[in-house]
Image 1 (cartoon, rainbow, N blue to C red):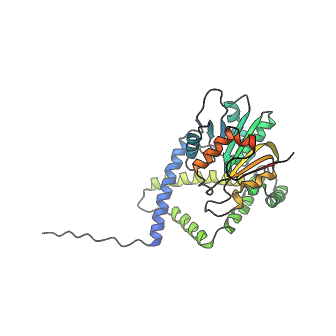
Image 2 (image 1 turned 180 degrees about the horizontal axis):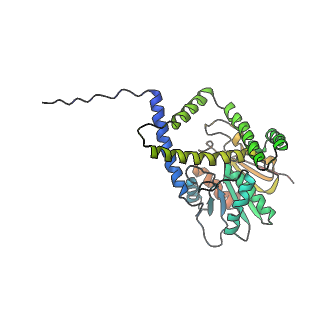
Image 3 (image 1 turned 60 degrees about the vertical axis):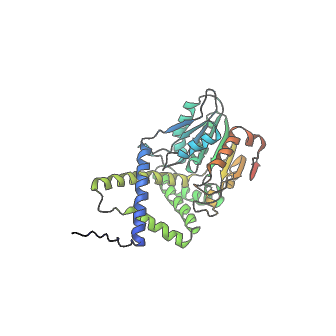
Length: 330
């Protein structure tokens, strides 16, 4: 009579657990990126005849702006979500201004007449700002620009001085723009690293190393498919990082409402995402402090602000429930 005895597998080491977690996360990203390639470049919510939607550049490279759907459902406001360039096989331009020059056409085609509302999240906020400037240059009325967690180093004097010195040396055309973008991204990354504790830096590096390793049990075809998707996604991210880092916003006179947490994705106070700094380039500016932190702001609160902004409440009073600050310069 045979006997069956089950033996427990030896406990996994910390390194093996980290490697397994990294692979699971990488597979999740792979399928999310794969779905992005088949998603629409624009998505409309709560539209009705004669409405005036917010054209929102969602800046989401992982989930295709899925968070906009929740904000639209909660706010019940008309919103047109616009994807970043590069998610559907196209190569993104080297500058935010060039991106805006392409995407302003989508806004004009959807609303050829009347006042316009534009906004964006993170890198999309920079594109929205330049789209608004392009619209004003074309003679269109820009009712409001909503900057949701905009990168804020770009508007700080020290950052602009460093950018100016590099631009004078290398120029901002062709390879010069790529060089300045890479250099300014280095400055940006240094600022992020200085605000990160050594244990956090070590943990981040371990996770990145773990996700780059492919177990031998996977087929060569599967591994190559994931690697190709990962490399394509990384190229788009690098292009946006460098374009965002090299962008220096010019002064604007249209109404700007900034919503920001002032904290990075780790929950630490950070000048990188403190939207108050944008008052230095906006003549008509309102800022509202959000709870939470970057990438985790709370859809309910954000939807409330969107509803107030698009219904005219914040613009007419300059304030809203919460920590509102308004600055106007003529």
